[in-house]
Image (cartoon, rainbow, N blue to C red; front, side, top):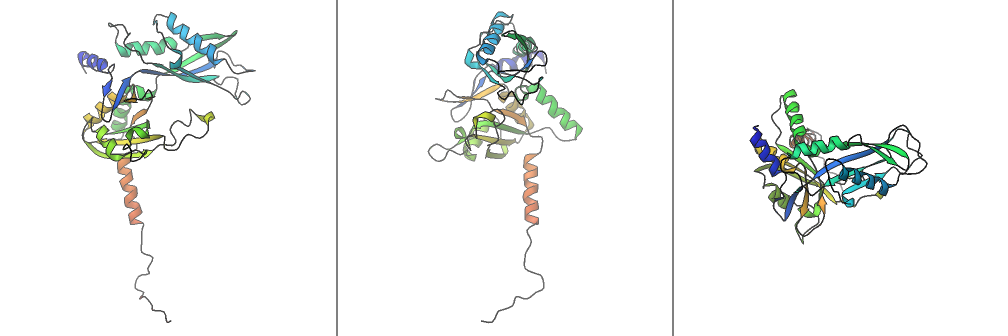
Length: 303
C-alpha cells in the first residue's frame, strides 16, 4: 500500500460514518488497562478507585501527550476478593476511551499517535498512598486492523485457504437490529439492510449473544437475556469483507437519539461458520433413518 493511500485511510478512520437504520460508527481509541503491584504484595484493603483514576488522568495531562480525559471515560474495577488474590496478581483492571480525536496535532499520524499513547502508558508506575503499582496497557485485538489482517493472511497461507470473506460482530444491542414495534429480537431483514452498506451479502446469521460481557460483569449478577446479539455476515467478495473490517475496527456503534455507544467486538471467521453449519445440517439429515424394519409386512391386529 502506498504511503498516500495509507494516510487517506487513517484520515477516514477519524470520521463518523453514517450507515443504515439510524446507526453510526463513531471513532475512538480504546485501551485495556491492568494494574499490578510493582513488587509482590499482599493487600489488606482494595485500592482506592477514585485516587487511581485521578493519578492516571493527571499523568495523561502532564506528559508530552497532553491529553485531557474526562473521568467517565476511564473505567476501573478493583479486585474485591483479596483472600483469593495471590501476591503478584493484578489489583484492578479496566478500560480507557478517548472520544475527542479532533485535538490531535495535524502533523501527527493517527496510528503513530495511538501507538505512542500505548507505549507511554505501558509500564507507568503509580504511587498510591505510599504503595507503588505498575500499569500494563494493551490495544484490544478487535481494534488493531493491521494485526488482524496479518493474522488472517498467515492463517490462509498456512492452511492453503482463500482469503476470509466473513465478518463476526459481537456485543451490539439486539434492539438496534430489531423491527420497531414488532419485536425486540434482532431481525434478519433489518440486519441484512444494515450490512448491505458494505457490499453484497452471500450468507447471514443473527443470534442472541448471552455470553457477551459475562467476564467483565462477574459481580453484577446475570445479564439480561437477549441484550446483545452476534452477527455473522459472509460477503460475496473478499474486498467487501476487508473494507467492512477496516471500517468497523476502532469504532463504537451509536443509534440516532441514543447516548449509548456500544463497544462491540469485531473479528474474522476462523472456523468457516457457514460451511460447518451446512455440514452439520447434512449430517443430521443423513442420520435420520426410518424406524420401520425393512422387508417386514405390517400386521393388522385383531380387535
